[in-house]
Image 1: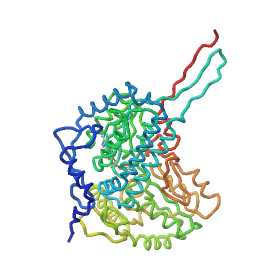
Image 2: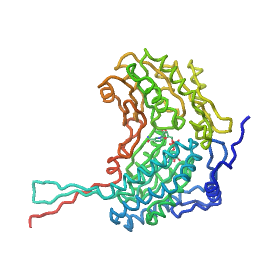
Image 3: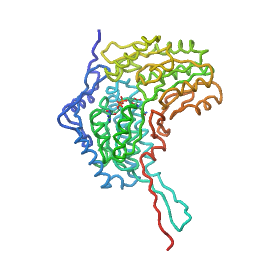
Image 4: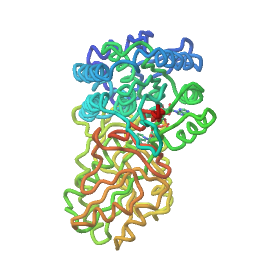
Length: 495
Ligand code: NAD
């Protein structure tokens, strides 16, 4: 029988805040709410609502974009000195650290991920803010030599009103990959967090006010696809930054095309983990396991295809089983949990459907680890073996703790298998041979390749996809191009 997890395990201040939200007290003028419709925000670890929130209608989305436009044209932020923008971003990072415990618990409850993983995410938010704070006053253009009596230069200014539509799996870090550089370079911003995990964005809106971001510069709207669609179709945006599924990315690109709004798309993946027999087995097993089981496999860069050299397949899978059997799948605030639930019942059912389909197509299915008896949307870590690499389980993103297995006998075959899907987000290579990692990395089509490590992110490292995984890069210096507009200024100096 399922035992309900008591709401008493939720710390008092978080419980009070959630209660206030459900009464319509959103805590910040930066969050623009509707009046009639509401939606429930669930704890996927208990399958019960945490709070309920208002849906921002198309009209409210229009108001948010107008606020952002007014703030941009008014110049309160874009004409602010870069040093002051740096100070505000640094203050925001300090505030995130001040409220670290609160934000971590909110993010854990909302996404279902174990509290320790959520803490890691909130630490990353502060790091990203500090990284882009540093860039605020370091972006400059060029002077250009021409054959005429001209003085020519380029300058980099803000893009204008930027929109962000974000997913639920890393809610605040993914929002920060967009918001931090946008603010650093003087843009105004409208964000729609996922309806499945919007809470940390609402709290962050309050911190923006406290840090001194001027009114109208940051706007948050709430709701699901209809709110996102209203935002993506708004003709007064200068840019849309989207992270989410490939299908939604296509819809956003179509909406943006009608207004010639520029877009960057960070989409889904089906990332290969290529393991050569020469690799350090203990290290590659742990790397592959963490690469797929982290966040219950609900990660864009989840290493969801194991491509292992045939001679070590049995030994590798035995070790993977041994390692994975230590996992405990449970509630985010249960200290035993090393893996959380699937985000929603619909997604849990989708995964079960994929697994049942795989079995009817002849797969061997192995489910490992222990699972809590609370009523969450749990799925144990699962290995699918015995299906051809053209089977849909090898080709399509499952977005759960599920890894497929295929084998190779030569380096060329490994590369062919690695490149054999429509995605191109990330890849892992595990090898003990000098030179092989870089050689194979050059031949794999993806935005990131990790060699003898997996899933390492840092604000200094550009991130993004190729093929159906999208285009554009976030993080690192690449975000300067994404959030500034280049202007060429030419002057006649003949007289
Ligand atoms: P999703 O595409 O269902 O939703 C993402 C966001 O788009 C949400 O805010 C949602 O409300 C909104 N949305 C839905 N329909 C819309 C529409 N028609 N117009 C505008 N907005 C709309 O994705 P998800 O389930 O939240 O996240 C999982 C997906 O995100 C996976 O495919 C995963 O690989 C991908 N992802 C990619 C990255 C990356 O950096 N490449 C990172 C994390 C997640």
